[in-house]
Length: 111
Image (cartoon, rainbow, N blue to C red; front, side, top):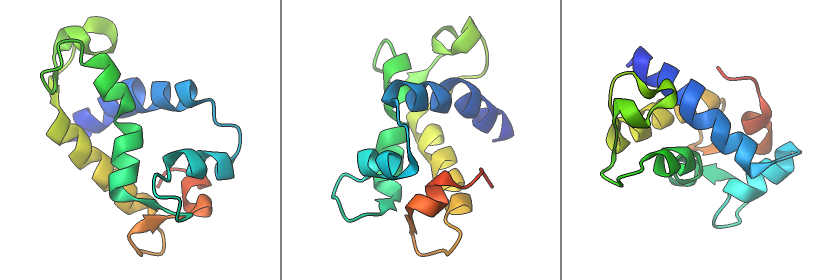
């Protein structure tokens, strides 16, 4: 699991953040907040953060093979594993444990 989180953090999450070109925490929340309720649900978080996975999955089989991973090597990562890792990250960021991320929780350093 730790290997999956490392791959996701290094190769999947940061390109998605850079591609979005978010300049402020409120802007970041607004882009992730699909239903515009001023908070980000797990589903919204996974959808937003899944962008890089989808972009890297060249053959659209729901699995990142070694060839599709940054550097062309590493263990395969399935979409299910990716979403599971994102859920764990979401739970750690959800400081008040309400099942949503606020602007403050999104802008806090990773926990």
